Length: 142
Image (cartoon, rainbow, N blue to C red; front, side, top):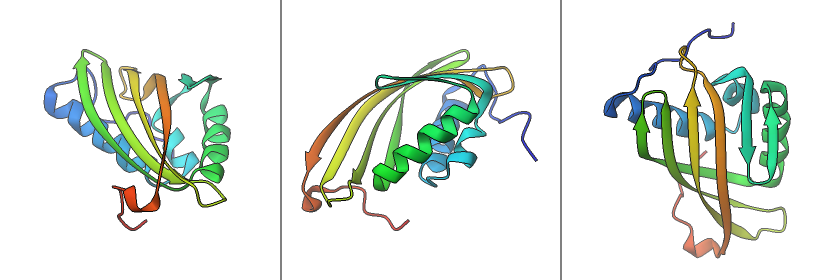
């Protein structure tokens, strides 16, 4: 059954914004595209790097491709700022490609939420940095 709301709801406080960021981190670290997509409105709007998406189905397709390419993905998010129904985060994640080359991706996201706590807009800017396996910071088990 699909949730019709996803607390905490806007307007955000410092504590509820931190909860929202942690919930997003936890969800993305599952690497389950369908589960992750349920945190977004059915008509969600995304910009992820140079990809522009609209709707949960497109999000599931995008995330399926992403995690087929970005193996052993591990993500950390940090609250940057918040106001009313918006949250800004900075993040880092590590992953490797199918040749075993490791990367740390750095970025910022701007989020806008509907009244029911589902994310309506997500705009992400991301840069990739090649790293060695020895330089990895995010080493927890899946």
